[in-house]
Image (tube, rainbow, N blue to C red; front, side, top):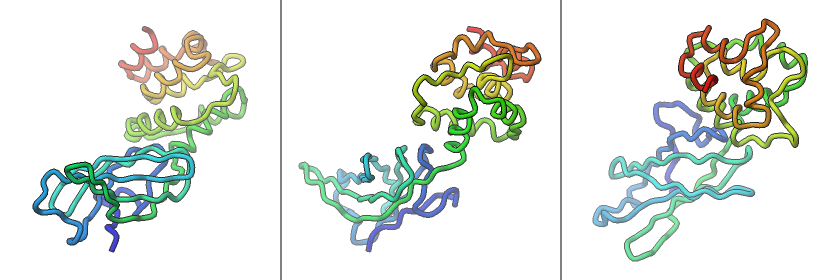
Length: 222
């Protein structure tokens, strides 16, 4: 019987994970797979997809429970996950196998929307109206920045907007998305966008200061 991949605290669906969210996986071992007399035995998870393979080391939480960090993946698909056992002396053996689903999540959807919104009037309007609860901004900063780093950008893409309107830096400044802003500053047009005012004549740094995002304001004025 293959060991089930389970999710701690019910945070994620069984055998599913977002593409770029490095969540924690829990593996429950069957009794016959447990090794009582070999403390040096290590377990690994091997993820095999269409174009990418990943290997994750595990932490032994108890005699029958392992935990591992789920890797980021490049596409939504079902992959094969093999639990491997490495014994002292170099012997590595497959123990069990499961199917696992990588799914596109809200952070990736938003990253794609933000990238496609640049240079479009309707995109700027939607960005301005995009309301995100403050309590969600901190977690969004992590997941959105990670999704943006993995998202292939169109050739010649720049964050600069034609005319005075909100740029992606204004979007990040309003919501205190420091990691997102750091990513944007490293993209074409990022440094130039620091000086661009929106329709109200406000720069991203001014917006961050007005919203009370002190650390982000410092980043935008360095």
